[in-house]
Amino acid sequence: MHIPDGFIPLLQTIIYWIIALVFIALALRWARKELSEEKVPIVAVLAAAIFAIQAFNLPVGMGTSGHLVGGALAAIILGSPYAAVFILSIVLIIQAVIFGDGGITTMGANIVNMGVIGGFVGFYAFTGFKSVIKNPYISAGIAAWFACFIPALAASVELWIAGTFPLVSGMVAMGTYHAAIGVIEAIITAVAVYLIWHARPELDWSTTEQVDLGGVTAA
Amino acid sequence: MMETKHFVIAGIAIAVIIGLVAIFFASADPDGLESSALVLQGDKTLTGETPPDAELTEDLHGGFSYESPMPDYELPDTGIPGQVIAMLVGIAISFIIVLGVARVASGKKEAKNG
Image (cartoon, rainbow over all chains, first blue to last red; front, side, top):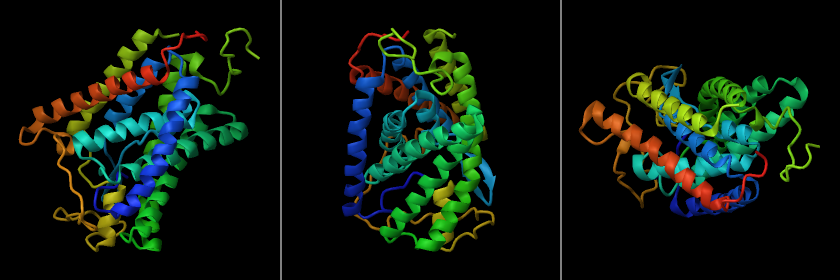
């Protein structure tokens, strides 16, 4: 759902840029506070994998294809919506600047949709579903579906404000396609969370108690 | 527990495999946003196939355009090898930049919870 240049008027793109920059600053603060040296390479490899998998468009019928966005995945693996903002912002900058995927002026909107909204919806939907259905992988899958669907609706509202899409038929089209694409997001996220948390059980913050950063207590 | 070095190597290997498989098997159909735009500009029905000649009208508001060095994830006019290079460059750049930014942003503090 990378919005290209020309889909949103310049003046409006500035507003999304400001919102994006606020969250990027918060994500950098998250990195300073929460990101241990141990996790730095894991964040980097997650970004590389998200870049690669975003290039893999899978058919979802209706003459449409879609790919993993990865906001829910990043947020769930690293235990913070700001991890999604951190990783997705950099990946989106690289995609737009080097590969022309997503606009430059609309990059702020794309960061807001896929990084911020995707990350926050993915993270809080995960903790919500996890508290009800207990299974972390099914919870991750459901959360990922919402983390694809809700940003798509947000994008259609932004494009309505921009005068590019009509409101109702825009939301119907975006909602329909991303409800289908969300299934891809759900399956890949659930499998990836399962594999990564099995390879690195200490990353699983959802089942084990939070390990104290001082290493003294595991309350 | 998988060591960090092995985790990173395995992760990069998986990324490269997915990226290379994508070059050959990724769907050429438009994505959800492009499909929506095609529906709304009248070139596609909601659930129907996308006509092969459907073109996205992009420059709706004007004012800015940008030429990226590797548009559509390929070196222009180089075919499959260009796509492979673009993919490997993208994976490498994503890893290196995020590694660098994360290292600086985290302030290289000691790993205390290992």
